[in-house]
Amino acid sequence: MKKSVRKILFSLILVLSGIQFSQAQFFKNYAYYEGEIGAISSFFVTNSKGEQVPFTIGGMSFRGGLGIHDEENNLFLGIYSGFEGNFRHDTGILPVYLNSKLALNIADDKKLFFSFGYGRSFQVGPENLSGYLRKYAIGFGNVTNNENIQSIFIEIDDHGYNFPDDGVSVITLNFGISYTFL
Image (cartoon, rainbow, N blue to C red; front, side):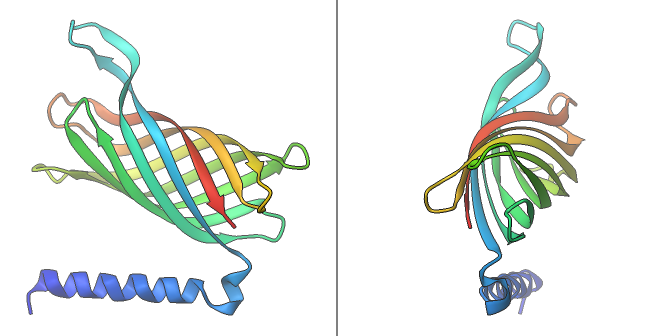
Protein backbone atom coordinates (compact mmCIF):
# COMPACT_ATOMS: atom_id res chain seq x y z
CA MET A 1 0.00 0.00 0.00
CA LYS A 2 1.32 3.43 -0.87
CA LYS A 3 2.30 5.82 1.91
CA SER A 4 -0.24 8.45 0.80
CA VAL A 5 -3.12 5.92 0.98
CA ARG A 6 -1.97 4.85 4.45
CA LYS A 7 -1.85 8.49 5.56
CA ILE A 8 -5.38 9.10 4.26
CA LEU A 9 -6.73 5.97 5.96
CA PHE A 10 -4.97 6.86 9.23
CA SER A 11 -6.34 10.41 9.07
CA LEU A 12 -9.85 9.13 8.38
CA ILE A 13 -9.70 6.70 11.30
CA LEU A 14 -8.37 9.46 13.56
CA VAL A 15 -11.16 11.88 12.55
CA LEU A 16 -13.88 9.25 12.97
CA SER A 17 -12.50 8.27 16.37
CA GLY A 18 -12.46 11.92 17.41
CA ILE A 19 -16.08 12.37 16.34
CA GLN A 20 -17.10 9.23 18.21
CA PHE A 21 -15.19 10.38 21.30
CA SER A 22 -16.82 13.82 21.20
CA GLN A 23 -20.26 12.19 21.08
CA ALA A 24 -19.53 10.14 24.21
CA GLN A 25 -21.78 10.74 27.20
CA PHE A 26 -19.05 12.63 29.08
CA PHE A 27 -18.84 15.38 26.44
CA LYS A 28 -22.43 15.34 25.19
CA ASN A 29 -23.58 18.31 27.29
CA TYR A 30 -20.36 20.25 26.78
CA ALA A 31 -19.66 19.79 23.06
CA TYR A 32 -20.13 22.56 20.51
CA TYR A 33 -19.88 22.96 16.74
CA GLU A 34 -19.16 26.28 15.07
CA GLY A 35 -19.20 27.57 11.50
CA GLU A 36 -17.77 30.87 10.25
CA ILE A 37 -18.06 32.83 7.00
CA GLY A 38 -15.87 35.89 6.52
CA ALA A 39 -14.52 38.44 4.09
CA ILE A 40 -10.74 38.73 3.91
CA SER A 41 -9.04 42.12 3.77
CA SER A 42 -5.31 42.25 3.12
CA PHE A 43 -3.06 44.83 4.79
CA PHE A 44 -0.74 47.21 2.93
CA VAL A 45 -1.19 45.94 -0.61
CA THR A 46 -0.32 47.67 -3.84
CA ASN A 47 -3.32 48.18 -6.09
CA SER A 48 -3.36 48.02 -9.91
CA LYS A 49 -2.33 51.71 -10.14
CA GLY A 50 0.83 51.03 -8.13
CA GLU A 51 -0.41 52.84 -4.99
CA GLN A 52 -0.12 51.22 -1.59
CA VAL A 53 -3.47 51.06 0.26
CA PRO A 54 -3.95 50.14 3.95
CA PHE A 55 -6.33 47.26 3.16
CA THR A 56 -8.58 45.87 0.47
CA ILE A 57 -11.15 43.08 0.18
CA GLY A 58 -9.15 40.17 -1.07
CA GLY A 59 -11.11 36.95 -0.55
CA MET A 60 -13.53 34.78 1.37
CA SER A 61 -13.09 32.55 4.38
CA PHE A 62 -15.06 29.40 5.30
CA ARG A 63 -14.10 27.68 8.55
CA GLY A 64 -15.59 25.32 11.08
CA GLY A 65 -14.66 23.59 14.27
CA LEU A 66 -15.73 21.46 17.17
CA GLY A 67 -14.79 21.50 20.79
CA ILE A 68 -15.87 21.67 24.41
CA HIS A 69 -17.24 24.51 26.57
CA ASP A 70 -18.03 25.12 30.23
CA GLU A 71 -21.49 25.10 31.84
CA GLU A 72 -21.96 28.87 31.65
CA ASN A 73 -20.78 29.03 28.00
CA ASN A 74 -17.98 31.43 28.90
CA LEU A 75 -14.92 29.30 27.98
CA PHE A 76 -14.55 27.44 24.69
CA LEU A 77 -11.69 25.26 23.41
CA GLY A 78 -11.84 23.65 19.98
CA ILE A 79 -10.08 22.39 16.88
CA TYR A 80 -10.80 24.34 13.68
CA SER A 81 -10.02 24.12 10.00
CA GLY A 82 -11.36 25.50 6.75
CA PHE A 83 -10.46 27.22 3.52
CA GLU A 84 -9.52 30.81 2.76
CA GLY A 85 -9.53 31.90 -0.86
CA ASN A 86 -7.32 34.91 -1.59
CA PHE A 87 -8.47 36.47 -4.85
CA ARG A 88 -5.64 38.98 -5.13
CA HIS A 89 -2.97 36.29 -5.19
CA ASP A 90 -5.02 33.48 -6.83
CA THR A 91 -4.25 31.08 -4.03
CA GLY A 92 -5.95 29.14 -1.29
CA ILE A 93 -4.98 28.79 2.33
CA LEU A 94 -5.80 25.85 4.60
CA PRO A 95 -5.60 26.78 8.30
CA VAL A 96 -5.63 24.06 10.99
CA TYR A 97 -5.55 25.42 14.52
CA LEU A 98 -6.53 25.16 18.17
CA ASN A 99 -8.89 27.97 19.15
CA SER A 100 -9.65 29.24 22.65
CA LYS A 101 -12.46 31.68 23.30
CA LEU A 102 -13.46 33.69 26.37
CA ALA A 103 -17.01 35.08 26.50
CA LEU A 104 -18.01 37.94 28.81
CA ASN A 105 -21.70 38.44 29.57
CA ILE A 106 -22.82 41.99 28.70
CA ALA A 107 -26.57 41.47 29.15
CA ASP A 108 -28.87 38.48 29.59
CA ASP A 109 -28.48 37.27 26.02
CA LYS A 110 -25.48 39.32 24.77
CA LYS A 111 -21.82 38.28 24.94
CA LEU A 112 -18.46 39.83 24.07
CA PHE A 113 -15.91 37.30 22.76
CA PHE A 114 -12.11 37.34 22.85
CA SER A 115 -10.51 34.57 20.85
CA PHE A 116 -6.98 33.32 20.22
CA GLY A 117 -5.98 30.60 17.78
CA TYR A 118 -2.63 28.95 17.15
CA GLY A 119 -1.75 26.26 14.62
CA ARG A 120 -0.48 25.67 11.11
CA SER A 121 -1.36 27.34 7.83
CA PHE A 122 -0.77 25.71 4.45
CA GLN A 123 -0.82 27.41 1.05
CA VAL A 124 -2.56 25.50 -1.73
CA GLY A 125 -0.47 25.85 -4.85
CA PRO A 126 2.74 24.82 -6.53
CA GLU A 127 4.93 26.45 -3.87
CA ASN A 128 3.52 24.39 -0.94
CA LEU A 129 4.30 27.10 1.60
CA SER A 130 3.40 26.73 5.26
CA GLY A 131 3.78 28.65 8.47
CA TYR A 132 2.61 28.96 12.05
CA LEU A 133 -0.83 30.56 12.22
CA ARG A 134 -1.67 33.09 14.93
CA LYS A 135 -5.26 34.36 15.06
CA TYR A 136 -6.70 37.09 17.31
CA ALA A 137 -10.41 37.94 17.25
CA ILE A 138 -13.02 40.08 18.99
CA GLY A 139 -16.69 39.33 18.51
CA PHE A 140 -20.15 40.31 19.68
CA GLY A 141 -22.76 37.58 20.05
CA ASN A 142 -26.41 37.02 20.72
CA VAL A 143 -27.79 33.92 22.45
CA THR A 144 -30.67 32.57 20.35
CA ASN A 145 -33.95 31.02 21.55
CA ASN A 146 -32.38 27.56 21.06
CA GLU A 147 -29.50 28.49 23.41
CA ASN A 148 -27.10 28.65 20.45
CA ILE A 149 -24.90 31.69 19.78
CA GLN A 150 -24.78 33.81 16.62
CA SER A 151 -22.07 36.44 16.45
CA ILE A 152 -20.16 38.89 14.29
CA PHE A 153 -16.40 39.18 14.56
CA ILE A 154 -13.30 40.99 13.41
CA GLU A 155 -9.99 39.14 13.47
CA ILE A 156 -6.36 39.43 12.48
CA ASP A 157 -4.61 36.34 11.09
CA ASP A 158 -0.86 35.99 10.66
CA HIS A 159 -0.20 32.89 8.57
CA GLY A 160 3.57 32.93 9.09
CA TYR A 161 4.84 33.08 5.51
CA ASN A 162 4.97 35.42 2.50
CA PHE A 163 3.09 35.27 -0.79
CA PRO A 164 5.55 34.00 -3.43
CA ASP A 165 4.48 36.44 -6.17
CA ASP A 166 5.24 39.70 -4.34
CA GLY A 167 6.84 38.76 -1.01
CA VAL A 168 4.08 40.37 1.08
CA SER A 169 3.43 38.72 4.45
CA VAL A 170 0.21 36.73 4.63
CA ILE A 171 -1.46 38.88 7.31
CA THR A 172 -5.19 39.40 6.88
CA LEU A 173 -7.98 41.33 8.53
CA ASN A 174 -11.23 39.33 8.44
CA PHE A 175 -14.81 40.40 9.11
CA GLY A 176 -17.52 37.79 9.41
CA ILE A 177 -20.36 35.99 11.09
CA SER A 178 -20.32 32.76 13.05
CA TYR A 179 -22.93 30.43 14.46
CA THR A 180 -22.22 28.17 17.43
CA PHE A 181 -24.36 25.09 18.04
CA LEU A 182 -24.28 24.19 21.75
